[in-house]
Amino acid sequence: MTKSLLTRRTVLTGVAASTGMTGLVAPAFAQGLAPTRSMRGGSNNYRPGAPIVEKIGGGGFWMSGTVRRAGDGAPLAGQRIQIWAHTTEGHERDQRSHGATLSDENGVYRLEMPQIVPAFGQAHAHLAFDSDGFETVFLRPLMASPNDKSLQADFILQSV
Image (tube, rainbow, N blue to C red; front, side, top):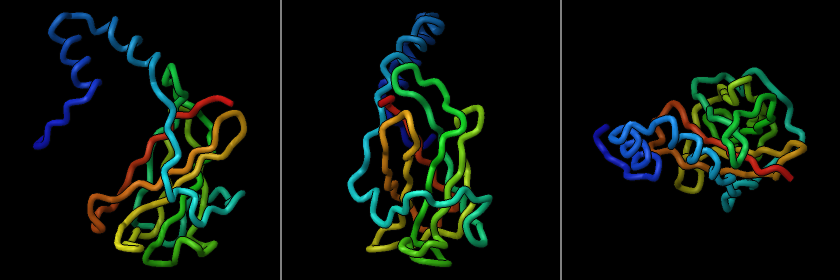
């Protein structure tokens, strides 16, 4: 990596590696995994019940991430994630720009969609988790560059 980020995870990993305590640090970290909070503007143009789809439009761009349970970080399979954005094929208000997918047995979700383009000066996606059993979460992650061909957004869900 060209850019070093000092986070709790990197510090704990470094301490664990230097002291040989790798088996003791990981469970302690997982117990404190905080839930994802909704982002301001994340629910704009949300459509309850958007259909589960194989792909949105012609594709070419990948939206992906993980879905885990708060506290222990266990992967959550079968969780519905809705995705929508302003793309080369439609505006984020358009029904054709919305679709949903399910997380797999490892808590991973992926959905191909048209290239995201800037709206209001920012290239961004909208994602929603709104299934039973966990608190609703809306995300609005920004792309580092409008030329990126993928974007990742992770959900850590809190039970209701």
